[in-house]
Length: 402
Ligand SMILES: Cc1cc2nc3c(=O)[nH]c(=O)nc-3n(C[C@H](O)[C@H](O)[C@H](O)COP(=O)(O)OP(=O)(O)OC[C@H]3O[C@@H](n4cnc5c(N)ncnc54)[C@H](O)[C@@H]3O)c2cc1C
Image 1 (cartoon, rainbow, N blue to C red):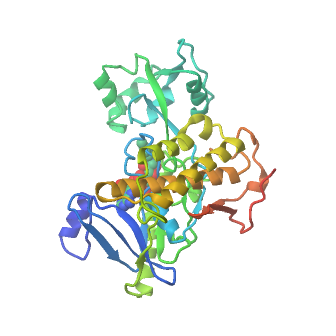
Image 2: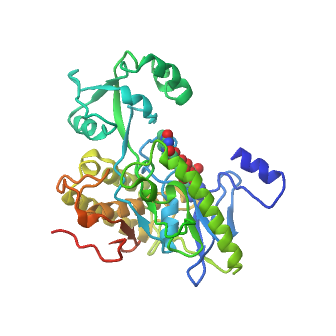
């Protein structure tokens, strides 16, 4: 950001609005996106940019699960794009969890390759070979507290940790714990679409979405194209963020140059900005708790089943009906209201997609459908605000197994 600001200050026509979240897109009557509007948190007031094209690069969302560095990742871009008619894809692949010491956001995961986990009685919790530890850990955590030490970490790795993950040791130092010797309690933080992989559907090599003039990059876009049904964490995600950012930027610039339609779009934000019915107080904390309960609870999201997902979908539909009808943020509450709307919309798409994928595949594991079913060898596309819909990327409506 500092480098961008320096370049902007050094001339040219770039303006960087830091601490200025976008709240909504502008759309022309022909359906093309023509800019965005938002607020300036520090300078005060608002902003509007009329543009030939827009790139959504607002990251994913972990539903504020206390994942490291994700406090501003609330899925705003998904909601803004969906209001313009964009589709999402892979939203069922949102069951990735990362281990962290309890009461901390320190989800740097590399060191846990050498972890030994213990239950409350001190018995070692057996782990399968390979990186997939969240299911056995979640199973143990549903029964009681889980502890960990990193005593198996080789000396040469210990020496490199401060370079690889400079912040990893900070909470331990603060607590006076030596993780290579002492046992400490751990938890699992849900990653939603951050180290999950769902996001805005890309329909062209220039990262254009299904809406003309609207492009997506990084975690805001689906990473199924590069990661399949498994997590993109570790290297794929950041490589995708850099590559897709360049492709989307070029695509957007080309579109803007070819379609010099000027201004003329109108702001299209709805939930949390312009309530469909009478505006009244909606409890944002309670809404967030409902979202987190359906999207992050281990028993619902890691050990999925059709019955649990249907229940989640119902709960989220009820919350959405109330929110869409009445929530309208004002003043300092505007951003939080809009962010809550975005997380709620995202949660509905996740639940609907997970229900539509009536099988187990990659990180999406259904207790009631433990096998991979060749009929689902396709992407699940999802969208809609008033009514959430799903379909397969073959263009046919999905036939769900009864
Ligand atoms: C703890 C952790 C460790 C990770 N480690 C790895 C790794 O080792 N290797 C790897 O490949 N990937 C890793 N990832 C994933 C990687 O960080 C992401 O894939 C990458 O940051 C995505 O970049 P992005 O720019 O798309 O999104 P982000 O980095 O999330 O950036 C999105 C930006 O948009 C801003 N924003 C949000 N809403 C709005 C709005 N309404 N208006 C304006 N701006 C908005 C946010 O504040 C943020 O600055 C890790 C993720 C986490 C959480």
